[in-house]
Length: 164
Image (cartoon, rainbow, N blue to C red; front, side):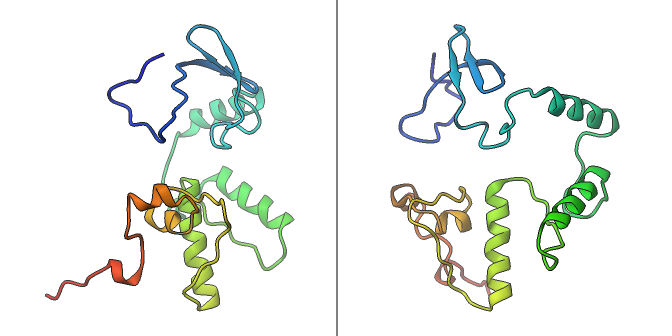
């Protein structure tokens, strides 16, 4: 195992496990040692690594196109189907899905939506919460040590308008 000079650590005590492959609930390092992946790719692999149905769906999608803009500019059948499915199981007034690229981006959208819907400017967050690494998401996260590095986070006082 090694610390690669071109990769930044995300915390003070990184695992530094060189992953060779992953299957089901396990990740396997380059020496063949298996670890249960409790992180699950930050929930991206919550059905397990390389689940056969997921792999088949990915391969089928790749034969059509890999990635196009997700913000409603282009209509995509898988996206439409998922939005319909979500609407079918949610309360009737929750009938629109806003797709984004990451969890922190979803949290940013939720913060904006909460402010827009309530007309209020203050946000309540939970002790111990982690919401992502963007300035807005970090502003409502709990880890003060991590946040202190980036102070001042997003507040009205953080922005200055340039007069033209």
